[in-house]
Image 1 (cartoon, rainbow, N blue to C red):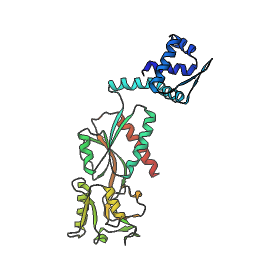
Image 2: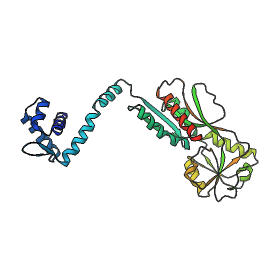
Image 3: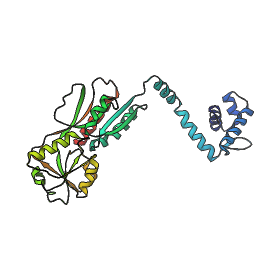
Image 4: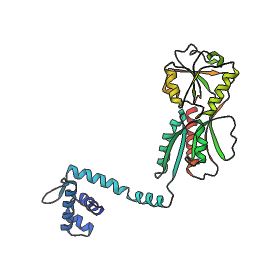
Amino acid sequence: MNYNKLNYFYTVAQTLNFSKAAEHLYISQSAVSRHMKELEADFGVTLFIRTNRDLILTDAGQVLYDEIRLFFSRENELYQKVRSAAQGRVPKLNIGFMGIRPAFHIPSIINEMILQIPDFSVNLKRYNWDDILPALDYKEIDIGLRLRMGEMQDSKYNHLVLDKDYPAMVVSERHPMAGKKHAMIEDFKNDNFLMLLKKDSAIPHTYTKRLMKNSGFSNHSYTEYDQVETILMLIHSDAGVSLLSRFAATDQFPDLNIIDLDGIDPLYLELVWRKNNDNPMIPLFAEHLKEDCSKKTD
C-alpha cells in the first residue's frame, strides 16, 4: 500500500465510477481498476461492489474512505507542522507544578491554548516544594506553579502571584477539634504530626518545626512522608494531623476538616519563570491561568 493507491481509492470512492476516476487522475481506466484490486489485496477485503454501471462501497470501503478523507483534510496541516518543527517554530511549553489543588486547572488551560494554537505542544511534570526553582535553572521546565513562603529574593525570576492564603490544621471529622473554626497550635500537642520530608520540602518542614518549638512542644512525635497526597490519606484514616496549605487537594476527602490557626505566616500561590526565558507561550499560559484562578475566587 502506498500514497498513490490511497489517492486513487479516494477519487474512485468519490466518483464511484472507474471511468470518471480515470479522467480525474489522468491515467487509464485499466490502471485504476488494477490499483483497486491491489489495494483490496493489501487489506484482504473487498472495498467495492461492482455493478454494470457504477460502484458501491462496502462497509470496509466506507471505513477506509472516511479515514483517508480525515487524513487528506489534515494534509496541509501536517506539512506545516513538519516544516515548522524543522525550523524550530513549534510552540512548546514545559510546565512544572506542585501537587496542589490549583494544578488541576492546568488541563483546561491547555485545552484553551490548543484551540487557539493547534500546533501547541506541552509537557507536564510534578515537583515537590524545593524542586521548582532548580528545574527552571536546569531548563527542565519553562514555568512552574508553586507555593512560596516569605519574600521572593532572587531577581533572576519573574513571579506572578495568583492567590494568597494561610496554612491551616487539617484533621479528620472524627477528631475532637473537628468542630472548631479557630485554634492554637498548642491544642494539638497530643497528636501525631504528619509532615512532608525535609529533604523534599525543607520550607514547610522547617516552618512547622519552628512553630512547634515556639509553642512549647518538646520531643513531639511526627512522621514524615514525601507527598501531600499520602498525608491526606493518612489524616482521612485518623493516623494524625497536619499543618497544610489551603491549596492542598483536601476536596478529594470531603470528611476532612480545616481549622485556622492564629499567628501563621501567609502562603503565596504563584507562577514563576526565569527572566531570560523568552518563550512566547509563557505569558500566554500565565494570563490564562490568572484569569481561570480569578473566576474560581469570584
